[in-house]
Image 1 (tube, rainbow, N blue to C red):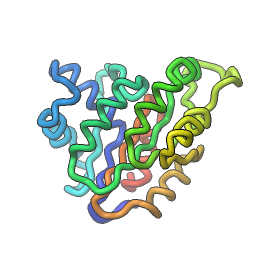
Image 2: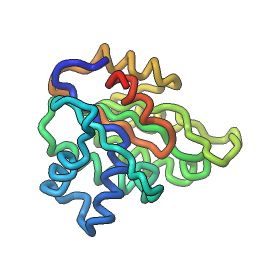
Image 3: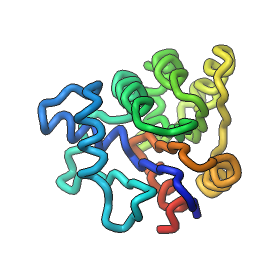
Image 4: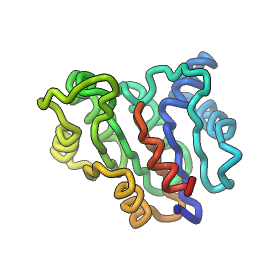
Length: 187
């Protein structure tokens, strides 16, 4: 479990995107971002961690399965006081990953340290022509610190070994990626 002052934001892109959409606010609005972080803090967390809970009415917006939302979230998150930024990204569906492959790499390249996990298939079957490692390869070509890890427990272990006080960890994706934050936070 993460201790000290490492900030963990789970499903931040989905939750923030939903909140921005409902409030009619611009996702790059720094004041709105910090205001939303304070409002979405779960009562289950202490003051050193935040968990942005998913909206309960089923309306998730586009969130982290679109490169534009990823980029806006990361640009705004960089303004949040922290040392290093770690992003754990779970691509959503094979068709979307293939269609936005280079856009995902471009959006994620703005993060300091990235972990990519397997594609969340949702309703799709694996066509065999796209993999999360394709995003990893593009990020490596850009010189980005990126790691592919397919197991959520191993992702949590990796973060527990590498995160230091005042680091920021953001999980992004439309699937079950929140489970990584749950492991880190001991939920």
